[in-house]
Amino acid sequence: MSASSVRWRISPVLLVFGLLVALTAPIIAARPAFANQAYETFVELCPSNVEGSSDVWSEMSSGGRVVVLVHGWTASASDMQQLGENLLEREPDLAIFLFDYSKSNGRWADEPGTSDCLALFIEAVSESHRAVGGSGKVVIVAHSMGGILARFALNDVTNGGVGQPASPDRVGAVITIDTPHRGSPFGGTLAEFKQAGELFYQTMTKAEDIGAVPHLGTRAATCLSLYDDQHPLPAGCARPPYLPEGIPVIQIQGRVIVEKLLFGFPIPNNDIDLLSDGIVGDVSQHGYNASAGSPQPKPGVGSAMHTIACRVSSDELVSGKGLEGAARDFARLAGAGLELVGDGADLFASLFTKKVGDAKYAALGVVASQSAPCGHSRIVNHPDVAQRVVDTINGLALDPPSQGQTLDVEPFGGAQFSSPLGSLTCALEKLDDDPGAICDLTAGASAIAPTWQEVCPDGGGSISPGWIVLGDKAGWMCAGGIASWPVNQAWNAGGFGEQIVKDGFTYDVLPYGKTLKYGNISCAMAKDGVTCSNSVSGAAFKLNSAGVTFTG
Picture 1 (tube, one colour):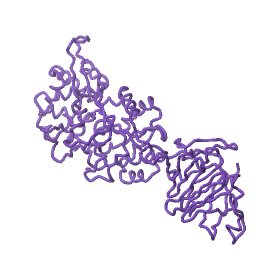
Picture 2 (cartoon, rainbow, N blue to C red):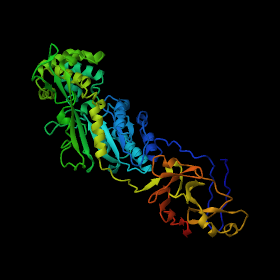
Picture 3 (cartoon, rainbow, N blue to C red):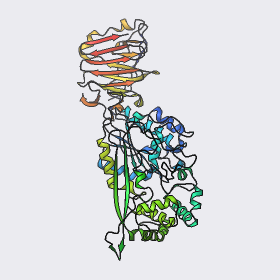
């Protein structure tokens, strides 16, 4: 189809604007990942988090679920990609987003660049989901310290952070994986590590070098200290707050069981349950409840605790199978630790009280965390974790779209649409500097259109078969013609509407009962016609096969 344009001028009687539209073949434009003010704020205030924080796999849809993956200490967003792929393999309708705070992961979760930026990112993702007609409910899936970030992100307790906490109505659930809700024996002050002895300190330094634990002396390492009612966090460390009432909390823990072998054969009744993932104890991984004192807000429906257990042989641990470099250096100490430890409770009791032998126990935990499939460093890639997350997400009763059946088309620069039967075609477009609405006059109503002399008495021309709502008035459009349809279909890429084929063109349909909104202008489709209105001035028109009715 060839291109043409519409010439228009303002009527002295009515406040009327025209529409300039280039004629093109129907195109579904690729929508950027984010096109809202919330994302612009995130980019402005969190520049170090932008790289790596993105949607990398799938398109949003109004009926799909939205997931934000948050990595743990010493990691980055790329470490969560395999989990994202595993989730999509099981549930293709998910929209997966990554949040990256790798440049700030030496900080505690209340510091700038951590939970404050996660809050802004959640708002941006939620706003994008609402823009395609979705609920805007984001499911946060967080590994390790990422779960602590999520707890801070929904509370106004940041230490000099930017922005505001994420609104609770933006979050459908928080799923934590091996999160140290009550700390880890591998956390603590630098002074504590040094006081435990040179061998233990050197062991922890090696663990730091291979990325098994946060860098010693950072607030991330200090504030990840084990704590309970008798053992408070170190001075200056903010206790992770509870999530707002009503948000489901699903806690997934990894639990490593060491199978002791003798000449390659299992020793009966001699397995060692580490009661941990090697780094975080099971009491801490399942320790959200009562972790921030009283009173505790009531968690949402669907809150649960799950365990992913796995077995690893003592030979695999002692040999350092699958590990390289410094990680293999732990094998000898891990073997010694196996001889000393009777069960996980002894292991972590020893680590907590810094008794003699800590270095061996610490080495055993580090090697187990990196060798076992459900160990702290590997659990996010475990297939059972992905299945548990998908089952949880599919079982959540997320709220319907917060805007009902309304889609904001401002991120798409407007929209053109037809009625379900194709008898009405309309557009929400920016006319000059302000949003406006214009619709084609149907064949059955064309006889009621006034002449151009009635609308534009000061000049020649012809009345366009349409009208417009903008500013203070609704009225006939004074123009020399109207562009052919359809163009600007990007609004429907997420499946908010439907599609029909008419006269060889594919039209995007606004279904009955749904509304498109552009600034203060909205158009609602019903079986008795389409109504476009201005929420500020009160001006409106209603169009159907019988004609048009103006208000204001």
